[in-house]
Image (cartoon, rainbow, N blue to C red):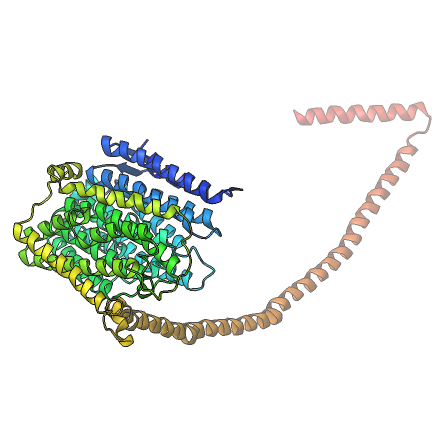
Length: 640
């Protein structure tokens, strides 16, 4: 039964992909996708309640294992519930060309993520991990007729694939050390293989969750349609890294360097992503940088020892970030472009603006919305780890408040009187999808109520940390300061550019990290490849050509030797054989013919002599008989 959890959306998505509904295509595709995901959510709810396990014998000694614990159950249920309104939005909002493929792949994406979530061994995890990466490539490159989309998909795919090498290395070292790939057997590792396995998992998680220095691939992923960005950032691919660290935390924490490394990665990404989001002029890229920053906070929570805090923030982040991405898609369609400075759609789209404000306030961390509660839980975990870490998490929260307010004001703030009207949005279904997600964001705010803390701890199977009063006060003060700074900049008409010159725009592209990567990594790598190509042409190929030339010379020499020696020997042998044949033919004719003629003459002579004995005289016959008897008696006597 547990295998139905990943296989149901995988099979349904492939079927939807191949479907060509003759009429009312959008309604048919949206309904089919939503139903498939709701069925998946039902199976996930059963799995979260019963915690089942399953296995499949793939080969002798190799069994694919599935299992559900508290963390896996929560995430397995989260993925299809968040994906359902996104799929409905995609069916209503995106272009008709390739729409069945897009909706089908989104559903397949959920199936791949579910396999990753419920995997109970590293081999099954690798299969789900690679499927998620492959499907994300297809989704980002959905509009492949535009030349930049396949390039963007390749960048995202190759960057995450580099991190995937860590997971392959972890699987190999785990099997070498423990003789098994099951999660339950990883605790038996020790020595260098333990460090290699943990390092491989951390590398793969950092790349998948877009932590520095891998963060820029998220900007390339923005080349995909808006629903792809929403699902990829909220509950599937980018969530995989933070999830696997939480799922395997008890094993990963066996090495002393795990906690400081993960905390350092998360904190650096939270701060760098916050700065980039504050500066980004593009709507989706602002949200992408925000995604890196908030997954950085999850890394901080897991590294600080609270997997429950990290997963709690993953859940609320999935709800408000998917809402904001879909809202960005509506704004891009209505505003005619991705630049935030050209939107200001609050007057034209008041309902969408109000729904978006729910997500923006949650992103900013404003109580009583859910994002504020889980951010405070992450802050409490960081404060328990080290007070200085708590202070830096507070600073990251202040940046989050600023860029959340910046997004809301620029995308859905009041429209100036002279703004151009780019036309209506595509349809009326999109606000309903946003409404479902906004309701989920607001509903999760019930965690602030008495008993919410205990309920979340029970569902996640771990006690959530409780922060000190000063942490809450400092956090809310920084949130207020961030929102105030954004409003003040908006009044001064500096919010879109923040006074940056065009030359400083590169700072918004991950603080120049892509340029540094091209200069320090990509450029030298391509140069090395070119040098190796020249070496191959001039040295390796020269050796091959020399060997070929030598072979030709040797072959020609052997050919001449063959003509002069071997062929001469063959011809001599043929002549000798011919001579012997002629000699034997002559001798044979003389000898055999003479023998035959002699034998024939002897027989003829005998016949003639025998004929003379036939005289007709009886006394001659008596003499012959008497001679015969005498000869017989003599022979008998001699024999004795």
